[in-house]
Image 1 (cartoon, rainbow, N blue to C red):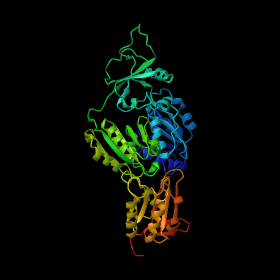
Image 2 (cartoon, rainbow, N blue to C red):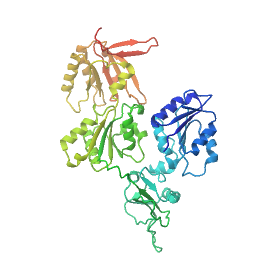
Image 3 (tube, one colour):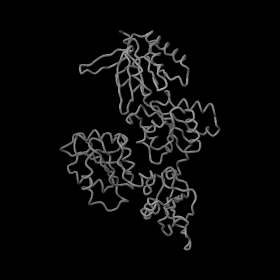
Image 4 (cartoon, rainbow, N blue to C red):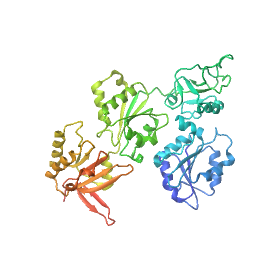
Length: 490
C-alpha cells in the first residue's frame, strides 16, 4: 500500500491529522491554502487534488465529512479491484469510517488509525464483521487466483454453506469462517464428476504454490484458490514468545515496537482485562487466549507450549512486564519445568510504562530521588516479609510505591502498612492515590499519610508514599504538584 494522503479543510483538523501520521509515518498532510497554516503541502482546489490522488492509487484519509469525499470521487468509481483505500475521519477524531478500497486494505488502515484515536473503526463489511477476515483481500504472501468467483463464493458462505480447507493458511484457520474438518472436496482443476450428488452443500478453499504461468482450468465458484508465495530469501523464523508491557491503560502509551508486535502476533495470551485494553490493535487473524488474574503460572506454561508448536505468541501485561507481572513468571516456569520443546523458543521482553511512572507523571516528580516498590498482596509471600520490607524502606527514607494495596479479600494490610509508616514518617507525608490510570474513570488525589484509608484504594490503585524530603507546591492557577528533590539542600 502506498503512503496515504491526509486531507484537511481547516487548521482545526491538524491535531487529528498528526495522530494519523503516528501510524502512517510516510503520510503527507494536504491542507487548503487559505484555511491551514500547518499542513505539509498546501493545495488550492480540494476536488482536483482528491481526484488526482485517487487516480494515482494513493490512499486517501479525509479529516472531513464522508459525503464530501464520496461526491468528489463518485465519477471515478469504475473498478473495485483497483480503487485505493478511502476513509473519512471526524474532525474531532470521534469516528473513523472506511468508504472505499476494501480489497486494498482500507479496513486494516482504519483499524490502525482508530487505535491511535482510541475509537472503534466503523467497519461495515459483512464478511469481515462475521468471519473476522476478508477473503477477497488476503494477507501478504497470498494471491487469490480466481477473484471472479469471489462474489458468488462469499454469498454462499453468508447463506450458511460450510468450507473445507485444503492446505495450510493460519489467517483462515484463525478466522471465524465455517471451516469443517471433513467433507468431499474438489478444486477448480478437478471439478466433480457429472453424476456426483453431494450429501450436503459445501465450499472449498485451496492453498497451492504460487505459479503465475500455471493453467487455471475451468473456474469453479464453489472453490477459491490462493497461491502462496513465501519470500525465499527469508528463512523460517524460530518460534517466538514476546512478553509485552502495554502500559497502564491508554493505547497512546504503548511503544511503537510493542504496537507492531501486537498487530502481527498470531496469538495473544493474558488476563481478559488487559487483552480488552489492547483489543483495538488486534488483527482479526490473531487469536485471543484469556484467563483469570490468579493463574499466572498456568498462563505462562500455556504460552510456552503454544509458542513451541510455532507461530508468534504475545503475553500481555499491564504496566511493565518485569514489575509484578508476567516476565518473571515465564522465566520461573521455564526454569522449573524445563520442557525440551521450549529450548527452541526465542523469548523477548519489551518494557512498558509502569503504573508508578504514570502516577508520578500526573502529579510531577515524586520519584525524583531514591524509591522502591512494594506489593501488599500476601498471596505470593507472607505478610511478615511485607511488613519487614515496609519498615526497612521507611527507616531508609525511600519514597515507596505501593502496588495491590486493597482487594475484596484483603482489607487490613493497608491499615497495617500505614501504622508501620507512621512510626518513621510524619503524619503530613504526601501520598499520591492514582486509580484506573489511562482508563475511563481515572482519578488522582493527593492526601497526607495520617488521612489515608482503605476507601482511597483498590486493586486498580497505585499509591506513592513520599519521603521526608518530598514536597507539595501549588501554582497560581491552583495546580498542585508533588516532587522529591534531587538535591538534599532543604
